[in-house]
Image (cartoon, rainbow, N blue to C red; front, side):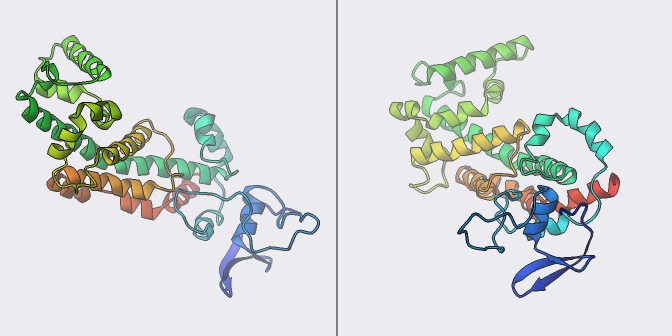
Length: 309
């Protein structure tokens, strides 16, 4: 028989295995609780004929918050206490859209857990904004200065000898058209600022590598990078990864499920350092990602349960 709305008295440890003790005195592993209360299935699952008994194994579906860790600390935060007000969640879901909130409850998570994940994802994305902004500005200006020096004019994009790709020339035309439509002068600073992040990361693709433009920019822009770090293939991979995360963050997509999120954050800071040591110091000074990441989902689930019981 399945239990409903668990009321847990305390955490207990039996040897090295963390356990929970319900008010009726029976011990339950956190995995069993997840299986019973989150997914609504019996634990342990029925064994096939000849299958060995393995009660210590985790159920096949587990909640993942983007941090490689045991789910014990997760359930310490979310299983105890009341669930979120069902009417409140039902009214909120159409506003967020069912498709969007479904991305946070694929494992059958309770309302407060799904909503906590959504809020944590938003706050985590916001904490990456300044770091991504620093990377974009540093890359754009380093390439602009490098091309200005190489072609002898800040309007290098108009220089006949500048071997830009056709798609890059089209972006420059669109940038000029956008500036003209709002009656802004077509000065280099305005044109440069109007170009997309993909325009700048595209300087390290194969097409620009064949013209030699990638190699010259790798040398002039990444003044603090080692020879291996300045390799065009390495720069292409690094900035493609940064652009992918940047697009996910700026388009309000889910990032907490990404196991490589911490490493990606570190890679952004490292890439900024290749361009400018001073910009790297500023980016680290204003960086809130480590704190938000460390706090996890618990503060948000606690507040949701407290405000809308």
